[in-house]
Image (cartoon, rainbow, N blue to C red; front, side, top):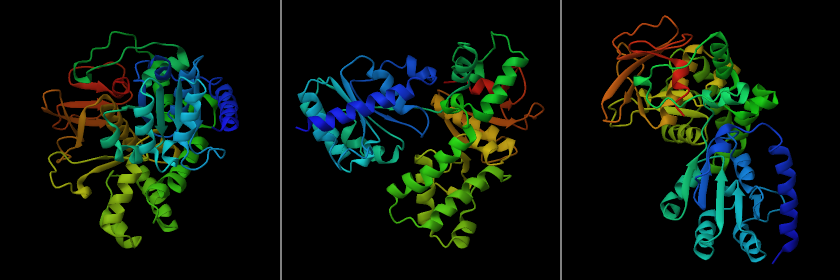
Length: 389
């Protein structure tokens, strides 16, 4: 038993808690209290997974540590957790768990040996953890920490506790929408998707997150990645931000960057799993033709940060909102009919057009308009979508 290591990790935990819990905490962290005793938390970098774990330590006898901590020996999370339980800890919270190459076996073994203890794990990417879902699903409950909603942004900036909009197609506003409300929505679109906006330097921090994902996270999951591929991913990000059509021209990229189609597709899917991009397949595309999919930057504020187009940002926010709420959303097969197809609870398709305050319906069932206050017949304000979760 390595008591000295446990003491070192506890000291580190207290230091991190003093830092993280002294900053403003996003509302979902304070209100989520139904996690299973054995849980795995996944979600993009910067959403607050570490803060969530530390907030739930509270006054409990729980040891938090990160598997990527320099003082944590390689592949030692099972031993550390076992030692912690042996000296009276009620639980362990393990951050960045994928840094232990045996994380899946370790979590399974800990569950089987210490079923009465709290065991949480988290990671900045869902890719490695999803690979182990088949083995751990019956033991651990998976919980997703999403990007922030406009509701959370309002709570953090003005203490307004707004209701969740369950179904935007049946939404009728019952609260006042004024110029201050719309101003805050404009601010939300610029910087409100991650709680780090409260501590300043939002743009620089988002750029740092992008860099860390590309230079550190993705090479971990794709060891054969080359420096040219990292440049390609940055080019893809810039292209998606500024392109007039949110689609990837795979043939052009494979030739220009001397990369096979198979590796390019794999790279794009890893970019999605690590929270950089969101792939929206075409409705009815059973052959998974990637060239027909729409591709967005997952965090809509990245469009402004990377000098992108507002129209792409609006569509990205629409995709984020419906996905966060659990709707199935697809790219429309015919742009003249609308931008997206969303399936309702009965799997009926609803076509949606997205744009500014004067955007026409085209042939869509609903039009989502930015810069408007109240909903009307078959017209949904963009801000309403951002209050769905």
